[in-house]
Image 1: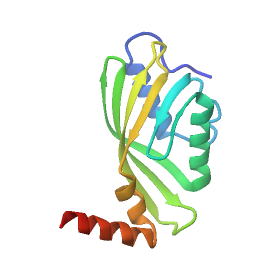
Image 2: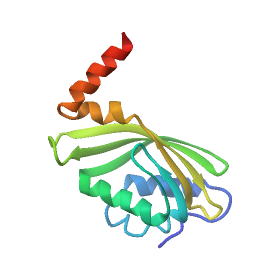
Image 3: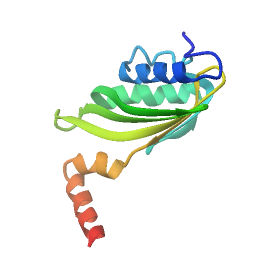
Image 4: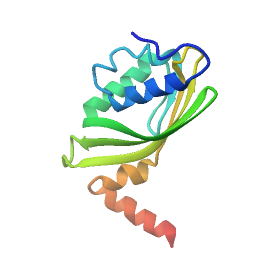
Length: 150
């Protein structure tokens, strides 16, 4: 277990967090105590939970659901103890075609004083980035999108 950083300057914390996401693996997710605080808050389009054990389950589930998941961070901004990270999530769906997919999104992070993440909130459009790419459901989602524009 390695703590991301120490102190109030979170530049090193942000750099370590980006490195964690860009090199994520089932092994790196075994022990998240160096990345997240014990009571960290996590929210994405499918989950809203608190605690490192629950966050670990989200990451482990990701490796079960998709093949070759990886993040590519495209930009980041840091202000005091808050950061905003823009990313591409690349993966293949195990249940459908094995074609690589890309979800574009962003994450708002708040760092605790010790440099670990205490708040993690993902922002991405599940309808556009995921559902539209699925067989059958994708056709319906694209139809609804066209109807909403008229």
